[in-house]
Length: 65
Image 1 (cartoon, rainbow, N blue to C red):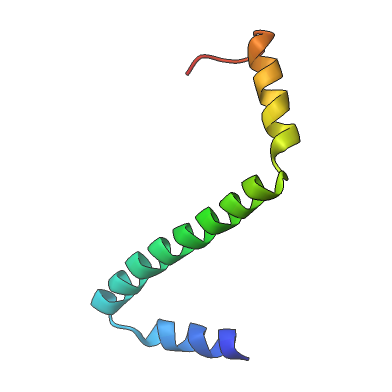
Image 2 (cartoon, one colour):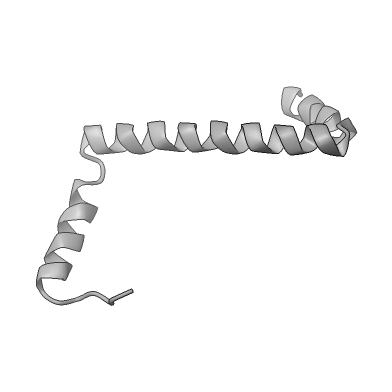
């Protein structure tokens, strides 16, 4: 129910406040993503993916950007 209430309140915001909310949420969401990424790194969850990427690079399996 709380998410639904938040949605309704956000819909009522004037454009200037909606712009401010978007900026805040973008920063908040980015920080949350960073925290989860760091947690995944520290737990070793990404070790297999990183190892495969390094191996592919060493074997020339990559595209130059």
